[in-house]
Length: 95
Image 1 (tube, rainbow, N blue to C red):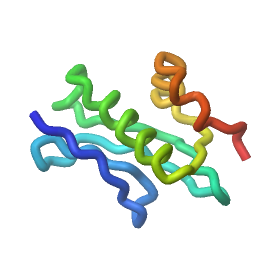
Image 2 (cartoon, rainbow, N blue to C red):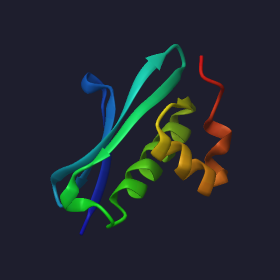
Image 3 (cartoon, helix red, strand yellow):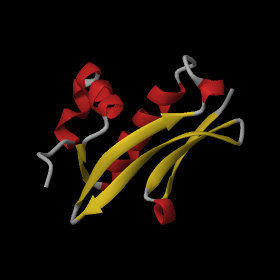
Image 4 (cartoon, rainbow, N blue to C red):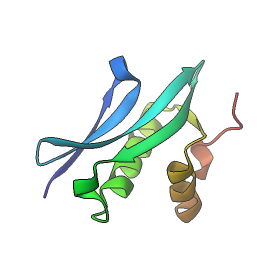
Protein backbone atom coordinates (compact mmCIF):
# COMPACT_ATOMS: atom_id res chain seq x y z
CA UNK A 1 0.00 0.00 0.00
CA UNK A 2 1.49 3.35 -1.04
CA UNK A 3 0.57 6.75 0.44
CA UNK A 4 0.88 10.13 -1.27
CA UNK A 5 -0.05 13.37 0.50
CA UNK A 6 -0.49 16.44 -1.65
CA UNK A 7 -2.10 19.83 -1.30
CA UNK A 8 -5.19 20.71 -3.29
CA UNK A 9 -5.15 24.53 -2.97
CA UNK A 10 -8.35 24.94 -5.02
CA UNK A 11 -10.26 23.01 -2.34
CA UNK A 12 -8.19 24.34 0.60
CA UNK A 13 -7.14 20.91 1.77
CA UNK A 14 -4.41 18.32 1.82
CA UNK A 15 -5.40 14.94 0.40
CA UNK A 16 -4.02 11.46 0.84
CA UNK A 17 -4.02 8.97 -1.99
CA UNK A 18 -3.71 5.29 -1.20
CA UNK A 19 -2.65 3.33 -4.25
CA UNK A 20 -3.82 6.30 -6.38
CA UNK A 21 -7.33 6.43 -4.79
CA UNK A 22 -8.47 9.39 -2.69
CA UNK A 23 -8.64 8.04 0.86
CA UNK A 24 -9.00 11.17 2.96
CA UNK A 25 -8.34 14.86 3.41
CA UNK A 26 -7.74 17.57 5.98
CA UNK A 27 -9.35 20.96 5.29
CA UNK A 28 -8.01 24.39 6.15
CA UNK A 29 -8.97 28.04 6.00
CA UNK A 30 -6.10 30.38 5.08
CA UNK A 31 -5.83 33.34 7.46
CA UNK A 32 -2.85 35.47 6.53
CA UNK A 33 0.28 33.39 6.98
CA UNK A 34 -1.56 30.80 9.09
CA UNK A 35 -3.55 27.79 7.89
CA UNK A 36 -6.43 27.04 10.27
CA UNK A 37 -7.25 23.33 10.03
CA UNK A 38 -10.93 22.68 10.59
CA UNK A 39 -11.71 19.07 9.67
CA UNK A 40 -10.06 15.76 8.81
CA UNK A 41 -11.89 12.89 7.16
CA UNK A 42 -10.79 9.39 6.14
CA UNK A 43 -12.95 7.14 3.97
CA UNK A 44 -14.43 4.23 5.95
CA UNK A 45 -12.57 1.73 3.74
CA UNK A 46 -9.24 3.08 5.04
CA UNK A 47 -9.96 3.50 8.75
CA UNK A 48 -7.72 1.83 11.31
CA UNK A 49 -4.98 1.42 8.72
CA UNK A 50 -2.83 4.41 9.69
CA UNK A 51 -4.11 6.53 6.81
CA UNK A 52 -5.25 9.42 9.01
CA UNK A 53 -1.92 9.60 10.81
CA UNK A 54 -0.03 9.41 7.50
CA UNK A 55 -2.20 12.24 6.16
CA UNK A 56 -1.51 14.51 9.13
CA UNK A 57 2.21 13.67 9.23
CA UNK A 58 2.57 14.33 5.49
CA UNK A 59 0.63 17.58 5.81
CA UNK A 60 2.67 18.85 8.75
CA UNK A 61 5.95 17.87 7.10
CA UNK A 62 5.04 19.91 4.00
CA UNK A 63 3.96 22.88 6.12
CA UNK A 64 7.25 22.76 8.05
CA UNK A 65 9.25 22.53 4.81
CA UNK A 66 7.73 25.72 3.43
CA UNK A 67 7.93 27.60 6.74
CA UNK A 68 4.20 28.04 7.36
CA UNK A 69 2.34 27.93 10.68
CA UNK A 70 -0.98 26.37 11.63
CA UNK A 71 -3.84 26.71 14.06
CA UNK A 72 -6.14 23.79 14.59
CA UNK A 73 -9.83 23.49 15.27
CA UNK A 74 -9.66 19.88 14.10
CA UNK A 75 -9.64 17.48 17.04
CA UNK A 76 -7.90 14.72 15.07
CA UNK A 77 -5.01 16.98 14.09
CA UNK A 78 -4.76 18.43 17.61
CA UNK A 79 -4.62 14.91 19.10
CA UNK A 80 -1.91 13.90 16.59
CA UNK A 81 0.21 16.90 17.54
CA UNK A 82 -0.28 16.16 21.23
CA UNK A 83 1.00 12.60 20.63
CA UNK A 84 3.87 13.93 18.46
CA UNK A 85 5.14 17.07 20.24
CA UNK A 86 7.92 17.54 17.69
CA UNK A 87 5.23 19.27 15.57
CA UNK A 88 4.10 21.64 18.36
CA UNK A 89 6.39 24.40 17.09
CA UNK A 90 4.16 24.76 14.01
CA UNK A 91 1.09 25.66 16.09
CA UNK A 92 0.17 29.24 16.85
CA UNK A 93 -2.88 30.54 18.74
CA UNK A 94 -5.85 30.81 16.43
CA UNK A 95 -5.81 34.16 14.61
